[in-house]
Each structure stands twice: as structure tokens, then as C-alpha cells.
Image (cartoon, rainbow, N blue to C red; front, side, top):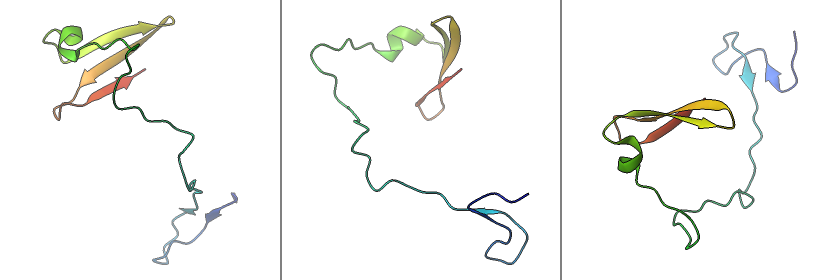
Length: 78
């Protein structure tokens, strides 16, 4: 089956699909805010997790799992 933008032969000559991906030049439309504004509520993760490394969050009837990784980062999964 042929797909637009997908080649049949990789650069090494093997039959591996290659895919072309379009990337936007700028991400001006995505505002990344690092510091909270005065009207934002800020919660400490230690207060939320209370010594655990994983919690469950119910949002709009769906349960999500938030986990603290070994590197200290947060991951949210559905």
C-alpha cells in the first residue's frame, strides 16, 4: 500500500519506510508560561502527593494517574 510522503527505501538501501514530517517555523501560537500570575492558585506537589510517588486524579468523570519519576519529573497518564 502506498502512502503520501512515505518512501519505500531508506537511505541505507534497506526496505524501511521513511516519512517526511512538516514542522512549523515558529510556535508563537503556543504560549508557555513559567511563572504563575497573581490570580493563579499554586499548589506544592509535596502537599498533593503527601509522600507517595503516584496519585489518581478524577477529571470530568475520567481517572488520570500522576506519577513522580526517578528524575523528579511529573507524568500524567489517562
